Image (cartoon, rainbow, N blue to C red; front, side, top):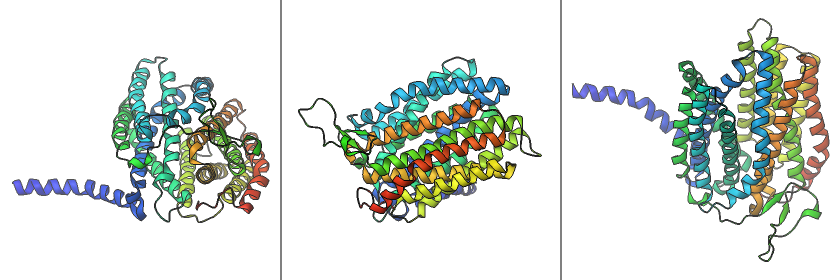
Amino acid sequence: MGGAVRSVGRALHLPVTGAARGIRRATHAHGAGESGLGKLIELHAVNGAGDVMITVALASTVFFSVPTDEARGRVALYLAITMAPFTVLAPVIGPLLDRLPHGRRAAMAGAMLARALLALIISGAVASGSLELYPAALGVLVASKAYGVVRSAVVPRLLPPRFSLVKANSRVTLAGLLATGVAAPIGAGLHALGDPWPLYGAFVIFVAGTFLSFSLPPAVDSAGGEDVALLAADEEHLHGPRRKTSRRPGLRTVGPAVTHALGANAALRCLSGFLIFFLAFLLREHPLTGESAAVSLGIVGVAAGAGNALGTAVGAWLRSRAPEVIIVTVVAGVLGVAVVAAVFFGALLVACLAAAAGFGQALAKLALDALIQRDVPELVRTSAFARSETLLQMAWVFGGAVGIVMPLNGTVGLMVGAAFVAVGWLSTLKGLLASARHGGRTRARVA
């Protein structure tokens, strides 16, 4: 009897341990285990799973549970309440994190623990309908962005030999996407048990992430006193490191390549925010041919997620010495698809545009991260990531706000989305190509 019990236990245990070993081999391959990048990949997967649990809970509360007209007002209120304070807080996230006495591992752990506790607060607010939902959602957003800023600044410190920055960034991002894809249906299943259950799941996940943060190598911690980055490309703003006698922090320009890449990414992020809200309301009132509103939203969501995952996967193996060329190419491709989808509006083209937008946003963001990691000195790199993330988030909110107020006309709406991309592409095309021809500020390995 004892032998039979042990055999059954091994049979049940083997799939779990086998899957865990397979995941560990994948995340630690090609030197990622020795450098510590593998542990960061696993931590980012935990981060993605926790975030999607909270997203599932908030989506049902803010959007799907009310009529369209009321949903517009509630979504707009959510954006205003959460994003207005965030635009004030976000620029100080980077410098604040740089000055934490225990470094970046503690910052990541703190961001995880904060979201774990806020998930419990949101669960109570969802159950009672309390207004605590909005400040708690703001706290989750700030903690999530703080984690993202630190994570982006940590990647160069964990780069294995013969590993490009684009490839490392894409591996980390792809792990987050895969974890999101696995956790999303689990969150939906938990939501069927009750509104607070996905938030309880998020609490457990983020607590695990808190402990996992401290397993990162000590190399990720940095000394305090990093400088402040200025999102400017002209030589007038280029100053040396902060002098000991100076009371004001010095400013370092991030360079023309980064500023132009940031403008192009902002255009794609604006399109993303626009499509999320515009298509959400449009497909509720006018579903795709032969489909219900829920299925229509699901098709577009799956297409966008697949495009995002594909863009991240392409970044994992793409070999290029010029991230600028990657950005120019993908933005041009998204613009072309947007124009075609607007002119010949239809179900297939809407799904194609969602996939193209997801693909372009993922790949262009990887290239932007590589440019910041390549061209911006480490002295101000974390601050540069914080400021760039703030600008991209504001672009997303602007696009989402336009999507909320737009009339529900597919052709007109997609033409507006195409105009966002066209403005961003045309205004940055010349600068990005010029930067690619000159090889950027440095010859560092980026792809």
